[in-house]
Image (cartoon, rainbow, N blue to C red):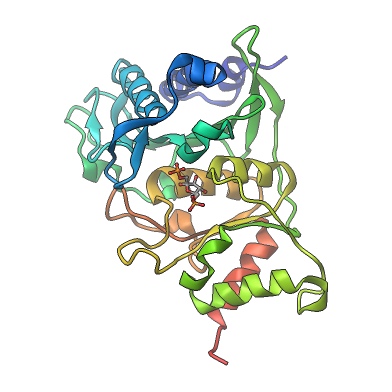
Length: 327
Ligand code: AFP
């Protein structure tokens, strides 16, 4: 049996990175236990305030955020933290070599209905050791990530992680508290007939995305010549996990629903870590046209349209956008 600890020892000589991953995943055990208790732990419902995104915070949003912040502040290798729930990055240990970014609880709207939620994390190198970290230190393209992963608190708690060219998965054994390796080289089929999108936003999408979804709905009778199925977890972690398990396409496209947002998902702590996982599992990840991991960020909370999953389907969406002409 391979545990997370033995896997890190065998596959990563960066002991500082291994230590920070261990810190994050240990907090994941606590969050998993709290979710198991649900209403009995008084963690459901609204926290009564809003985050930097203007979104109402759930009690567990705040609790998960604080647990991660507290644990990483004590880790001497962590130079700073950026969170979906915090306006600005939080300096930690100036001599640390790593920066940690996270969405502490992705899919908050699922908490009170007992549906899947998760924690998404991304780890970047810190280039100014000895100095107090600032927001600007985090503005690195996704292709600079040293590690990325998520914890999915579903029927079981699963950790997906990439620190090498592979994507691996662990299942948390609630009896021993160990993360046990269950997949050592996740690979996504290049083709799929399953897609995930919130179709209620149809009228806000750009024409190429409307055409793409129209083709999927037309199925066998349309240009795609086969029927498609749809799924929508309303938690990116759940949709990405399904794609890593059986392929598929996930998209939260550009929409005009809110003028100042490029879509809903955040680049630094949602799109980038998920894109690294998907690409290393053989999939694709774009903003409909451009590779997400090559996007040079300008703000730690910037949003980006996302199309990710089975490579041939992601490429199809790109071609459709690039070659689109008004009819
Ligand atoms: P919350 O964390 O606010 O529930 O948002 C989750 C999320 O950022 C992402 O995980 C989902 O894929 C997407 O939003 C769901 O968005 P809709 O609620 O608009 O479907």
